[in-house]
Length: 286
Image 1 (cartoon, rainbow, N blue to C red):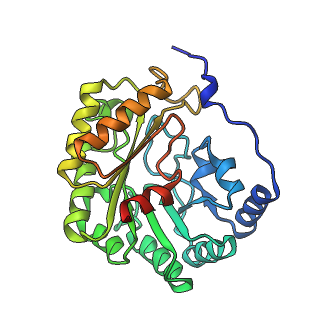
Image 2: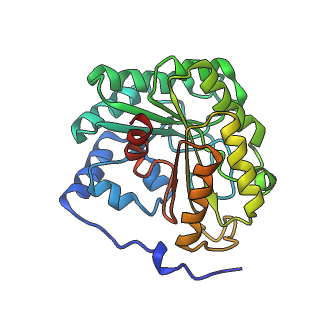
């Protein structure tokens, strides 16, 4: 069922010296952002603030989630220079809070964990004061791979559960709800000082009882931060939107998320996993 995109989900084009600087830097360095690859509606706003979420390990994902517009294809070998290139780009942009995400790399024995670890270490080498948030895949449940990432000491370990348990077969057929919860649970157990974070999309057909159950599940694994935004269909080939939630419904659910025991909840129609990430982090730290 095709539905007209509500006005509150529309974003105008922003073209400033800052956005052009970010795009030029990305082009010259050959780096990829999830902002562009996943068609994030906030990318121009973030670029205008000299911010971007870097996507490492290439631009081809080994999975085919029905909601995601990232290219699915046989991936190329990781670029060994990428960790240093990302660190240098972060330095040039003057970022104090860096968000690094990745494509799923089920073709690699460690899921790309060592590459992520090197990227974190390169950033810290340039400036130990830069806060790092890594948004990782489930690593197919490989705990040794997860240890490799955690031992590089990111400030935030983010892994998105994406949707409620009941919709996994429809939305994330190559993932597993319990396995994703396990990533967050193990992270907090192995490195309790590292903040854990996850994100979900709303408007895929989930019910409120299912959402409340998800809140309880996240609290049970001591997840610290939850983000929730409206799912927007990237192309006609992707799963359709079930409904568009009005802004006040996001506000109501955010209140319930906090009441459930989550430390921080960022709910809004255009909220995305890395949107205003530094603000959510700073509130946890206070």
